[in-house]
Amino acid sequence: MRHESFERWSDYVSTFHREHPGITEDILSRATSAHGLNPYQWIVAPIPLGSRTLDLACGSGPSLRQRPGEQWIGIDRSISELARSHISGTDNILQGDATALPFDDATFDGVVCSMAVMVIQPLGTALEEVYRVLRPGGMFVVTMPGRRPLRIRDVARYARLVARLRRHRLTYPNEHVLRRDRTTFESRGFEFIEDTRLRFRLTFDTPETAAGFVESLYVPGATSANVARAQRLAARWVGSDIGIPLRRITMRRGLAT
Ligand SMILES: C[S@@+](CC[C@H](N)C(=O)[O-])C[C@H]1O[C@@H](n2cnc3c(N)ncnc32)[C@H](O)[C@@H]1O
Image 1 (tube, rainbow, N blue to C red):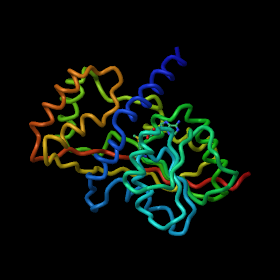
Image 2 (cartoon, helix red, strand yellow; image 1 turned 180 degrees about the horizontal axis):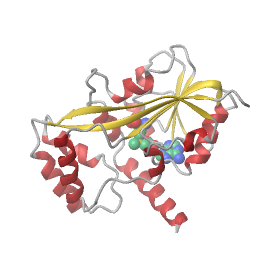
Image 3 (tube, rainbow, N blue to C red; image 1 turned 135 degrees about the vertical axis):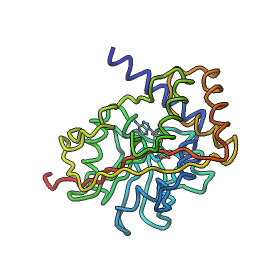
């Protein structure tokens, strides 16, 4: 049963990114925090300049592009995402799986992973690989969907959207990492430095942005009719915005080898 769910999610995520390359970047790069940062500027901020850094599950490469001229390299298993990154002029990206990284031990000073720890499977194997390729004391920064902070209107809007998608809420295969629980990371040798949450405001400037936001949500099993119903609802919000709640965890690889 567990294996079946693993394969169902894995196939879904692969197909999703083949059909919608760059969709995460298209939405998140337009969203801004109260400090004026987008989520990609936010995730790279803790990594010191001059660090040799891996962008794990980099997608179309938006985090890499925050540090032009630096020794950053990306890896993602989706060929379609990599093709999209090339169109954007990003070439320092490899195709590969987070659970079998093609790098020597202690290659990197830093690793970032934007919006992927909730879907990489098996996550424990990927975290062991991050630990292996990071030098002792190196930084590991992840972002993931949060449940807060949100405004009351955001909560109401999400409730209406998921109802149209015939869901109770949005879910992911690695639900446990979205909670306050730190053991997933700490048991693999990472020490927490900071755990923060921000609301990023996405303005629905056009019906296309509203439709793209709905399209960017992982909703396995949703019919195209239900997605279209949710998109029609979001189109009514053009001229206003929705909050995207994100959590960022900044960690350090423990010094034990
Ligand atoms: C929500 S997207 C995030 C992409 C990018 N980091 C961003 O924030 O725009 C999740 C990414 O994880 C990648 N992914 C999922 N499982 C993976 C794995 N086992 N190894 C490598 N990449 C994986 C997908 O191909 C997809 O590009």
